[in-house]
Every structure is written in C-alpha cells, then in structure tokens.
Length: 281
Image 1 (cartoon, rainbow, N blue to C red):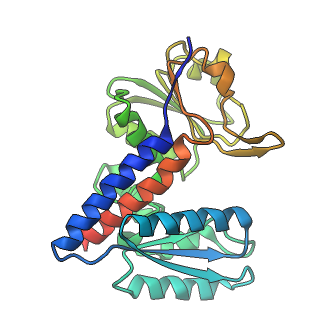
Image 2 (cartoon, one colour):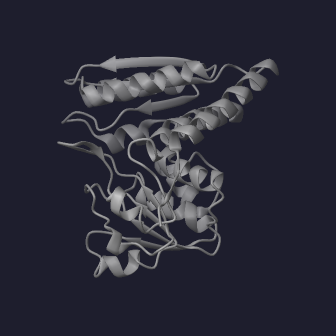
C-alpha cells in the first residue's frame, strides 16, 4: 500500500481563495477591511520568516497588516502596553504575538492579555474554555487546519477511532477536543503512556504532535489508517516530521508530508480567524 498524500499547501490555497472572496464581499457590504497585527519580539530568524509570510498572505487576501517589532530585551510591561494599545485599536481585529518569546518574557501572560475577541491564535483561556464546552469561539489555528484538511479529503471523523499523540496546549489538547466534537472516539496519549504503540495501532486517524523526529514507525500504525503529522523538526537532513513518512506511507491509506502538510494550513486558518473576528465586530 502506498498512502495518498494529503496536500496541505493545495488545500491552504483553497482556504485563502475562499477567505479573499469573503473579505471582498464583507468590505463591499460596508464592513471594515479586517486587520491583523503581528508582534515579533527579538530577532529569531525562523520567527522573522514565519511572521513575514503571515504578513504577505494577510495583504494578499485583502486584509490590512499591522506589524510591530520589539527588541529581545523588552520588559514584560512594555509588551503588555503594546498589546493593550492593539486591543484598543478599532482597525485591528486580530492580534498575534509570535512565540516562543525571548527569555524573561511570559508567553502565557501575553496570550491572556490579548482581548478574547481578537485572539486569532485561539490561545486565550476564554477561547480555550469555549472550545472545551463546545461553544462558538476562535479556535487554535493548527488544530483547526487539521480538521479542515480531513474535511477536504472527506476523511470522516464521526465514529472513527482517533488517537492523538502529544498533549500540548497548542495542538494536542485542542485537536482532541475538536475531533471529539465531530463525534470521533478520541484517545490522547503522551510520553508517560504505557505501551503507547498499542494505542496508535488501533487508530483509524492518527494525529501526531510530539516533537520527536520520525517517532512514529510503520509498526505503530494500523494498516489503512490516516496519519496526520503535525511535527516540524530541524535535523541535519532538513525538516522532518514526527512520523517516519516513507515507511509509514507503505502502511497508511493517507498521510501528510513534512513540509507541505499541516504547516501551510496554520496560516490559512489564521486568516480565516481574522475574518471571523472582523465579522463579529
């Protein structure tokens, strides 16, 4: 069996086209151009590239981009003040503080400072609580992108045995909740799980976000499973995921590549969230 490749770059392009059309209709009807503010603290090269890509795609879909940079030595109170300023700016509908922040700054404090209505990353405790309760709210972009990818390829979640590897607040927990809301039977496993492979081998849908290169091997995957690899690990051989892609592709029915799988979906869903925030007023 050779797995079908789930092309996140292609699906993300479709999401951007949809968002651009919706932005044009929203503005034509008298709404404001949605505005996304990105905040970059420090000069981490990877973060600079990522934020630049976000800003470019924001403008490309007809939104306004507001970018602010602060030096790495910025104290927390100054970052707080900038977030307060953006919260109060009516032209800004979404705020994204690029993480990880430099040493001495508190990521969680920054996320909690953002107005829940402008929390397009979906990290604010209010929006996390809304997700846990199954209520409407802004959803974390990478988990939302995973669900969008599964929907596009018509991979049903309802009734499926879905195993999530990794319990982070950014991916593991929220994607498990989103799958549960879609009526999947969800198991969340992690580094302390006993006989982790016994769980992964029964998954119809296996979502992996554990941060270990090629951690999931072919022997850990049920024949015919759908495998979603959220991992991005920098190695001597370039970017690799949390799944041994070549080996697992001989067992799975479908799989996301790294790069080009879940990664592009994250920015696409960020744009969708920004539009939703603007529409909500």
